[in-house]
Length: 439
Image: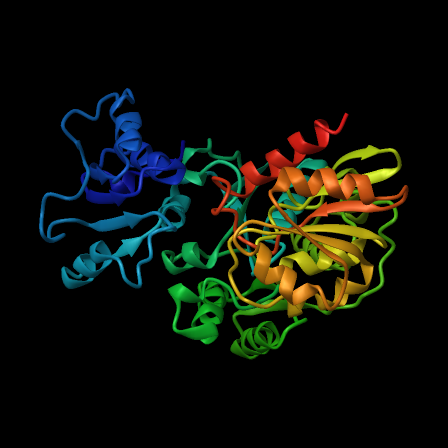
């Protein structure tokens, strides 16, 4: 794990004991810090209590809520990105006590000075972060450069072993994580795009965009920025970064660039052309040569639940795009296949599917499921044939029966999963299982 002598003897409160919270507590204790940790989930508290905290002594207190009414005497409150710091009582108490509220990415930034010399690339944006992050990591490893995934993808960064000298930490960063980070100086910072999302956490779309822009504000002069300019908000950030003088190189990724993607089986569709361009620019900034980049693009396996090719049955391709939890992230998948049987629905984030309109012409039939099923059916039935399937299993069966050879059955929900599933991963696995059950 990643530790730091800078944390020794300090006192931290850690809120949230899921994966990143557990890794944070373990790293702080291993560094000699005192920790008060809590989570409303009793199981999470039991997992931490069952750890072998060698040498921690009485440096750890686990509770369901902090016993103190304030945070005086703490050096920082470390919260999970899922904690809504704009309205959570703990955040209010920390601010009252003038105690910093940080996340595990900020702790990683503080520990960097003690790690072997390395570089960091941070990737953010509304859509495409996971694919671009994994692609950069894959290209770097293909080129023989030690690399570690972390942030909003894979294992928590504090739980990973430090890289050897010359390595690159590849961090996917949500706006929530950036909000809790203040000193992460990325050698390369990437912004893919900005569309309205998570607006319950911000003062409108402008606040959300400002959160993303902070990734560049934390960069030292001379570092590299890679920014997609396919939307007005991202283009404005690109202009701001260019005139600030902080980055010696600002690479702007324009939409609609024609690329030969025929040799990249896991990177189909115009959105993946943009993801690939961003990854190429980031890797070139690290000195990766063209041959290694080309090989990495060709051998990239793709991500589970993101345009994942599950099976081909009787000439019909089944694609799991469960990670598409909003309309903007669904649009590229619709555009990537010529004849689509579209399974969509779940817990709606908005009451509009207008962002998906560019792909409507590819849809043979739509199959709606979940809480948003009726709403989405009413929005689409004047545009295309629609079936109100209700459940994912029923939708897969019906779509498979209607699809002809050469068609694609696509789960791309444009919704959160929490009405019928634990998360988008469980929803994607249910799709895989339903396809397997077709026989």
